[in-house]
Image (cartoon, rainbow, N blue to C red; front, side):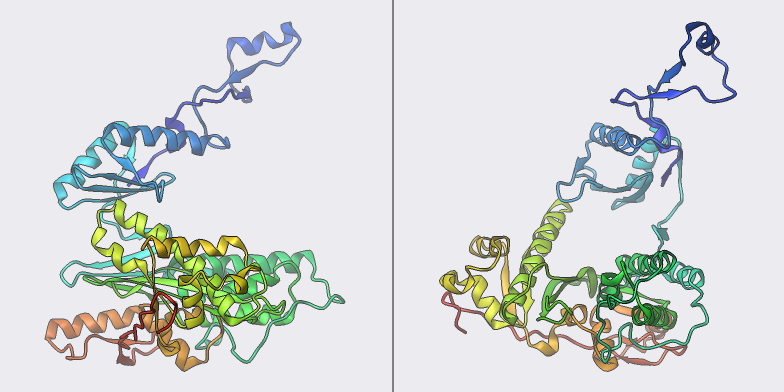
Length: 461
């Protein structure tokens, strides 16, 4: 649902004055010449263009939700839940997403909103913030993509007819800072930043496969050179080949978290850390970021990456608890890493002499492990799904990891639906395609069975 003229519904708490608009005649305006000073109006309600308007509108609708027995999530202040009626509301400025177990409850909250505000009912959720949502209630699946937005991005930057490639980053090319003798013009910088911003929008939506490449090219936005432009265009070329790809969620799955780091891989010798959490067969959050300090060993780099994953896990635990999905909280407590040293370092504080130089913010992971809020697990490097967020991978490995993140093409979903209707699903499970090229060539979805190694209290296996 959409709120019409949302910012005009709230009263201002601050004192704000405005000039009388041209063409508006009020008695006080005719007195301005006689008084020898300009006459202004005091705003009692918010209007569009005020910096106070978004906050005033949020306060207004928040009070409305409280009056209807909704409770705001402390993990995400845009999430409101009515536990008595089991109604969930997600707010983004003036757009609302409603979820309830029955149509009667959906009708109830729609009626309450329409009585209070001037609303537009957009029907069943099919698009939201650029995401295209395709739901199959019978098979309990959800497919999220951004095909239209990606096509627009390619057209805006003149890359709609480019030659496609199979990976967003070339593993044989190492990007470095621009030479001091080269200075990009203001126009070149703006164009580069616009292109990177468009790619980042796609990546933050539903394209975790772009995370590393976008993170890498964004580091050179202040002074890009031709090699950086080539790297950006390669991401566009990859998007052109996979623009119909999206995340495919299947009902009945569990939550699992993965974290990894590539030690000293940046040109300033800082490491690249990344993590992802998967739910119902596909990624729900991901991150690829250069670490703030130089790590002295691969264990230290992995330890710092683990800390970022732990913070995300704690946030997800809060969201799941607020949604009443406590059954999935034990799953999200488990984080898989491929470095035994980092796991031992996090679980055993006796290595103090080796870690005195590490920033104290990274040691909070130990407290959460002691409180049993986090459980660290080991998985082999070959099974590490977060590897795609730390380095540029060759095509075979990259394709394998994108499938493990739940990224498939739309034509694959259609093929699966046809097979299910005709009863042709194989015993090995659903067959997925890579989404590459114009064809729908299929290959089996790669299974994952983590080799879990439990560490004793002293850090030994």
